[in-house]
Image (spheres, rainbow, N blue to C red):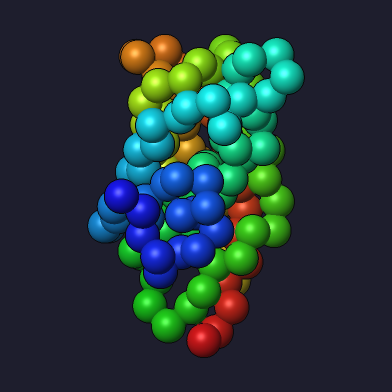
Length: 124
């Protein structure tokens, strides 16, 4: 089931992340529509998942501000296959107008991606 509040996420078949206290978790049951030409999970799908999950982790830790991605770096450690992906994100540091966040994507206990991002905080 997808969450219609986040139309883009529902387009790729993902629910909204669960979040609280500067942490967030998202799961996606990846299937053939998430694959690249090599038959592995497309890097853009993985980037989308970590970006959305990190944004939700930050939203759970700030009040009256909206996070926007300023910089995003992904390290692809292992190719993913169709199946359950688990994305976890956590706020690492907060400044006056920037937040640093980390995320990981795992599948069957194997680490696929490690991500580090900086988000700017915009006043609502």
